[in-house]
Length: 221
View 1 (cartoon, rainbow, N blue to C red):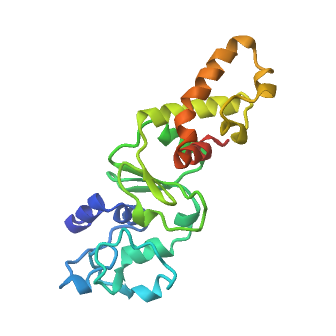
View 2 (cartoon, one colour):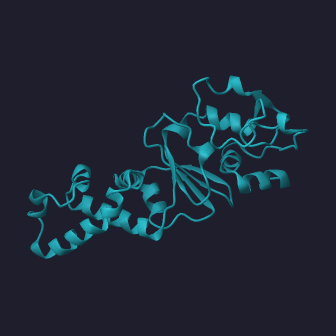
């Protein structure tokens, strides 16, 4: 990777993902803001008019840094045309640059610890509806409408959720304020205190929908 590419990848998750998936691409300095990419502000030897890439109904301009631009660079064209990135969870790392589709097992492994500053995670909760990678940030889990900080407490709650599901409680039951007695009654009595404690520990996620939904996705077998 050349120096300009490395600089772009370090500050932009999209450029790191592109480098991992497609290989290095030369970045050039735009002559002015109007000639730079409308999303990232950089330029490549191949630029595409914005209207050829996104529809008139597109509303995801929050992460665009150069609205004076009328074109998208090769990297940003790739991210908006890649349907798999809208449909599936992915893990992106910065050094080395990697882009990995994440099934529930991999998602669980990554989210069993805090998400570090060199990692970005995208989890489409409504697959195909939104472009998540353009909004992704290092050290965050990006879902349809938010970028979630994933802390040690969240990793702990993920372990709690997986344990309760393994004991027979359904995803719907986990949303309730108390354990479902028909399931609880089938467990040995000496496990009840642990179940009740786990139920309380999961409480903050019941008030924080996106974290709960990501936890469910990472807990499915």
